[in-house]
Length: 118
Image (cartoon, rainbow, N blue to C red; front, side, top):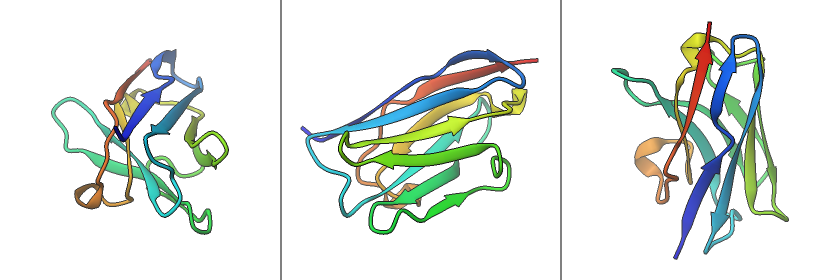
């Protein structure tokens, strides 16, 4: 069964860091782009970062640019999201999916909660 599993979320103080992982099983990342999305309570889901398995090109949304870094380890079939200088407004459930565009993603993870305290 193909699935994505996120991990690494938690509670951190403002200014702190977390590293999220998105591990694939049942399929390989080759041929997919992996996107990170987040959804805060009462807000719409937003795409925040994406990486292409073809050429490792990356995308960052403005709210996370220069603070978050996406990377992949194809040997582990895992994509990472390093989050630095976290802010309370980064509090959300974070999801990874197999596309940069949410409506185009075939597979989604179950999500991992990130809470940033002020």
